Length: 617
Ligand code: GLC
Image 1 (spheres, rainbow, N blue to C red):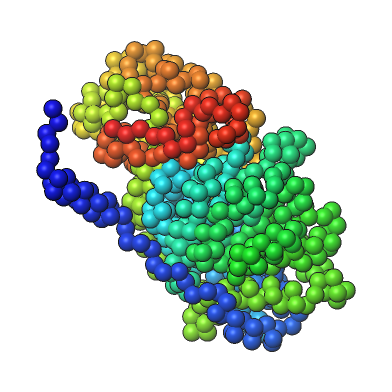
Image 2 (image 1 turned 90 degrees about the horizontal axis):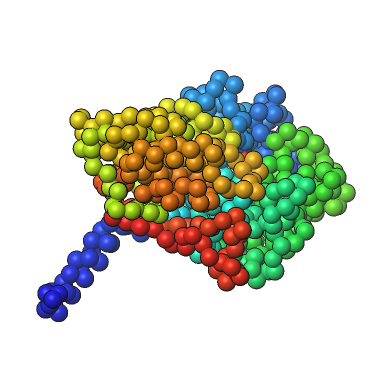
């Protein structure tokens, strides 16, 4: 018989519970920043003084690796520079090398008439991931499973501070794609297949990066990407019928808005200062040349006041004729062109297009005003502020405090899919824990793509991280033996086995897959461990759900860990029960390849684990 509590006692319990919940959630984020258009008086006054060459220079973004002579910066009045995925300083990837590169290039702008500082852009998509020793956070697919906007904001706040430690002030993040087919290689860059989860997290991510004031020296300019429908392309619509990345999204406008526009709505509400149009097409027309989308919907209907930056050489895909492509894209509403190597050609062509009347001066002035609005809002134009790096920020770069935020993000991103006979949580006093799998002791595989290199790679790619094996060793008592074999042999006699399997690093089109079954090596490692007759915990590092038919039955417990980044101790926290799993799937988990790309309402929709699924202890 359940003890009956007097009503007032139950009411008191509810109050306590609500207070506990509210206390667990950090204060609501700061109010939105000043609208960018409030900087128009200064921006327009400056545009009025500028020559056409100076204006076009602001609309040009080369990649530093292709700038053979840095005096091009003052010669072409360049307004921005990027480092693409593997475009690193010649001196290597240390914090100092990156900071010296940034300062060296930024100093050139003081040699120009107007001294407009460059905006330096980089893909800080899960921490300042190009720099050795940076804290690497879970990729967005894991953050989506936290369903925690306040945590996502905090993750991006730390990322912004580590980006600023190199002087760099612009992150090409957050990716607010809504992947609809997990065969796409960029699935893990999305928070979720559910547009409402993306909408819930996009705004906080922007606020984390930009802070409540873009002029804060710890804020960086965010860049919501890739507008619009990048995650909705049809399988086989890209690159000769083999892939999805940069393909064609074939949906009606209502679907495009319902599914793919949601992240931009909350990003714009949060004051995002830049947006990156997609390589992909919408019903056969390249988005980066589509005036209705870039100007009609984004700038006019949604009131986006920042500027549009094209994707890497995306203009090349708008038309086979580069000069024609420039005219189409700039007239469609593109404001700055990411022209990594062809920046001199771009400048000459755009100048000619203006002279020929193909691109009106009003369009040039609008683009430059938008770019300068952002630079004024960031305090870049403040003559009392140096645009060079604040080298004092090195003291918190990769710090224990920053790693603690990443560890919490790891804890909350894990999704417990199975836990037969309560194998988890494991005891820290177990006699012996046998660890196996190709991903158990590999920071590179743990971080995935966009880590130090564009594609990422296996091995100890960056210092300061903790692998699962190291984390388990750190967590257990002195009397517990922790043994390891990559292939799962030698487990006999252990109390419990942990096998860490999954994908190897990849990025973008290199991750497009027609088949998502596990590698034979992974299946063998689980089988070997199971043949020892002990309970088996399987942990999957992957950029998306995978087909589990070969291992799920053998696993007594199964944890989807996505691409957790450097802080593997967060995984041990869940394995040993120091943190009870709270993660919920942000993508439905298909039973088979036949089910991939099906969504609620589709015939035959029958996922192995539904969107939102997740167990706890
Ligand atoms: C890449 C990606 C984009 C990235 C840009 C700069 O191709 O599509 O997400 O921001 O180029 O590296």
